Image 1: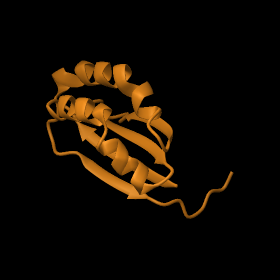
Image 2: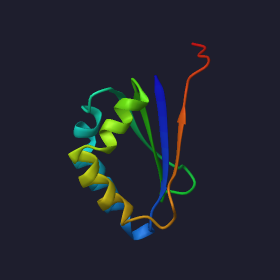
Image 3: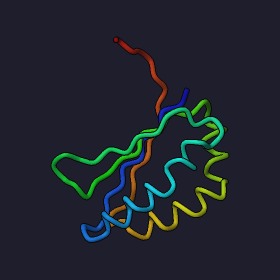
Image 4: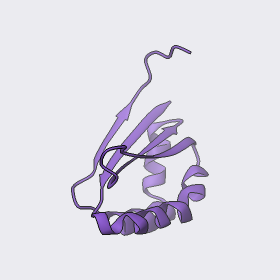
Length: 98
């Protein structure tokens, strides 16, 4: 399982635009082959900072999403709203305590 976190900082006046893009596309993203989970987080103290948290069966599935029509539509529209360069990271879970 691959955990993908992407932190995005938006221009303050573009937050609503981003939320609209996410709302319109969240099901298409979540339904990509190999996507097992999708969340959108908003920073508590800096409301113009959002992060997506997604779980993928494999890096190949994530790369297939990056090559998809959905990503080709969502990412350019989202990227146009950034005030800073996004920060993305991939992780492998080593331990979970419930």
